[in-house]
Amino acid sequence: MVNRMGLILAVYGKGGIGKSTTSANLSAALALRGAKVLQIGCDPKHDSTFPLTGHLQNTVIDVLEKVDFHIEDVDVDDVVKTGFAGVDTLESGGPPAGSGCGGYVVGETVKLLQEFGLYGKYDVIVFDVLGDVVCGGFSAPLNYADLGVIIACNDFDSIFAANRLCLAVKQKSQRHKVKLAGIIANRVDYEFGGGTNLLDQFSETVGTTIIGKVPYHDLIRRSRLAGKTLFEMDGPGIEDCVQPFTAMADYLMSGPLAAVPSPLGDREIFNVIGGWR
Image (cartoon, rainbow, N blue to C red; front, side, top):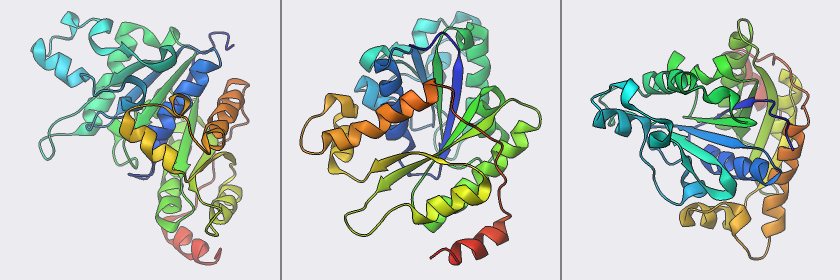
């Protein structure tokens, strides 16, 4: 059981890499280990918490629109809902496509949490942040996070994005406490000759580690479609799917080794990855 340490995780990764599914299952694993968890979805699609609640909940933007953006008229219960294993969930939401800045909404959500005094009420807060860090709004969770976590696959585009995220963590660490806990390798497919060789070499190069390896398995896809966590599924291979999340929860709750990464330059990462084949 966590002793109300208030651990804040900021989860990043290339768009489409599986951040929301991974974040939701990690939140569930932490809760099943006894932690009081809040997961915050920071994507206008507002589907980060779907596996935990089974539905698309109202977002901060939805609620604010109903009260003409008078924040003083918003209560915690209006935006925070409870899902599987007692995990509390919140979705920041965002403007319709092409009509505004999603990063601004994320930044405002971070401030709202502070006004509600939520940062001290949870053992673990998990920020599931949209895609790559492309503006200050999307990097705002790093201002509050203890640890950054990067989700990546064993391919070039994913590692290129991971390197950029290492740069964001390094920059933020100059003014804030955040460090990088490590990389979660997603969709690891050993059956067809895949693995984590590129990620292993990248992690060593930038001074971090792989903290979990999530297999490429149809149960994970099916759980997402069903709006459930892996802990609510059954079938062949379920133990292999669940075990990495349980292990990562134990690791993160026990005070993981963390460091400020040493990312490569954009041109350098292009050249280096090519030599890791």
